[in-house]
Amino acid sequence: MFAMSSMTDLIFLLLLFFVMASTMSSPNDIKINLPTARATTATKQVVAKVSIDNLGNYYVALGRQTPMPIAAEDLESYLCTIQAQDSTMYIALHADQDIAYREVVNVLDIANQYKMKIVLATKK
Image 1 (cartoon, rainbow, N blue to C red):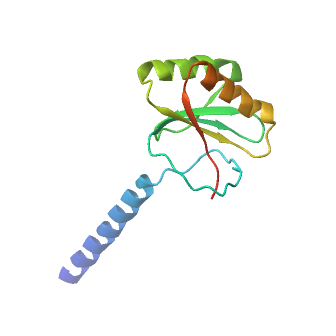
Image 2: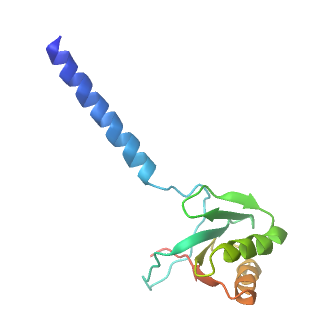
C-alpha cells in the first residue's frame, strides 16, 4: 500500500507539470503563413494584435487573449478604442504572406492616421 502512494504522488506531479507547461504557451489559433525577414529585432511591448489570414479575414486580440474575428469596417473604431486606453502601446500586425497588399496597407493607413505605433510580424 505504501509503495502505491508514492507512485500516485509522482503521477500527480507529472500531471501538474504538463498542465502548467501547456498554459504557459500561447498557441496561435489562426493559421497565418508569415513572410520571412533577415532582421531579428523583436519588441516586448506588443499589447494589441491584428491578424489577417490568407482569406482576408481580420482577427484582433489584446495581450495574450484568444483572437476574435472582426469585420474590416470595424477595425478602425476598435483600434481607436485601444489607443484611447493607452497611447503608448504597440500594435502587432500578423498578415499572411499570400494576402493582397491592400489589406496590409489598409491597417497601416489606420495606424498612420491615428499616430499608432505598429510592428509587422515576420518569421526568422
